[in-house]
Length: 167
Image (tube, rainbow, N blue to C red):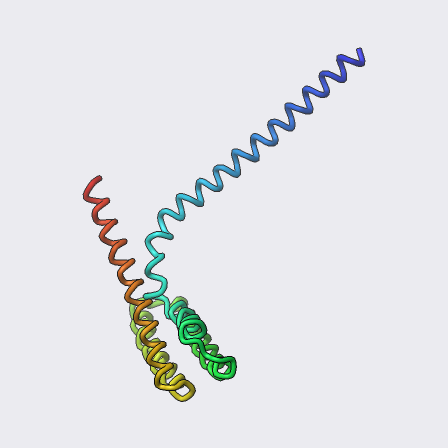
């Protein structure tokens, strides 16, 4: 009797553990599958646009270009850091204000104007700290990055159009 009880309880425990593992594995698979579908819909379409449309991302890339591409020394980076920080905070505040606005078209138009003005002030502040050669290097690197991002976006649009034609 004890052997039967032990065997039945062992089988029941194995079955319960198996069901638990199966259920969690199936749930994890559904979650991963849903994330992949979401990523297919959004990530590919916006990957190239990030650097061209988001001014904060462009500013971040500019900092990377300045740090590693131009190769500034620590003292100059310390002088430039507050300029980047102030510009970043200004851009984030402008974007937040535009997102919270009720009239989206007017907000986007105002945002574009504000971004241009902020970037003009940003480059004017950088010119006070950097040498002419360093500014030239930075603008060249920024233009290369923007050109590459635009090419990716255009290629993505071409691929999307072709895939629609072949459906």
